[in-house]
Image (cartoon, rainbow, N blue to C red; front, side, top):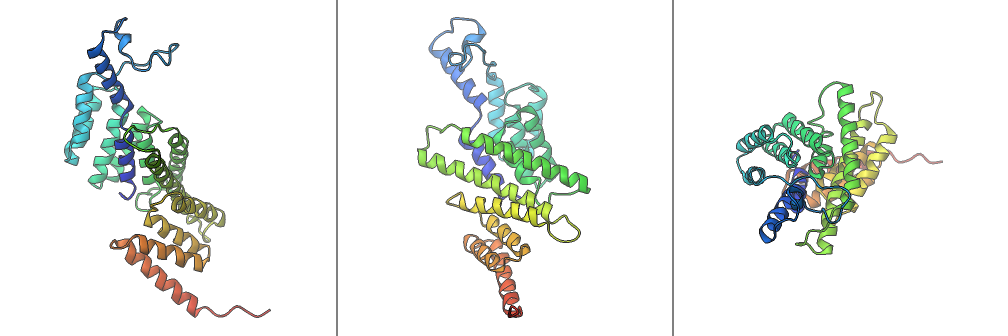
Length: 298
């Protein structure tokens, strides 16, 4: 469950909170020169958007409380800080980011429903919160997390698909942090995009396996396309993506391709449980291939 959550947290750390950045800029401006006009003079970005005033940045107290959430290492305490923040600052620009950390802390405790609850609240506060889009797109379609009736499952898969597609729209618009080179920034975006394609792959794989009469070929084809995009779109593919691609190939009866995918999963996942799982799949498929009757002569 936590295999991709680190990427959402990475996005959080790499790109941070726009509201916190604006608050810092406003404080710097206030220290260096007094604004010519009342409270609106401290709004960041006003010069570039003269026709529309930017909202007031978070207060120093809000920023302090949010920074305490980010730096807290105890998950239970972190969740409590998030709840306290939401109660005290229900209209804060930082609320969506705070809820993301509530989801992260809940994941650390293995509380899946709470992860989804906080992630959903985060998107309600800011539908474009990339880290929360990544979180829900990844969590909702996971086999161990996809519970409930058929209608409930399809809703979760639909929500995950929508969140993933929105993330794909946002990632190209990210601005390069000053601390990164263009090459590093390109790799970060490629990694995030790979994660989203893997989430879409899981959505289609889950839908493919819902049928009572066997796997749905059309959904399997979509899952194959997404997982192939996930493993080829980054320099550091996730071994679990290769493993899932192997499962897709196996269901499509593409045995050679499945063996190759599972072998890649084993290679990339050396020293982890996935290596053992992948090796078992390779051995099973090779045995099936050896025992299969030869094709009939025309």
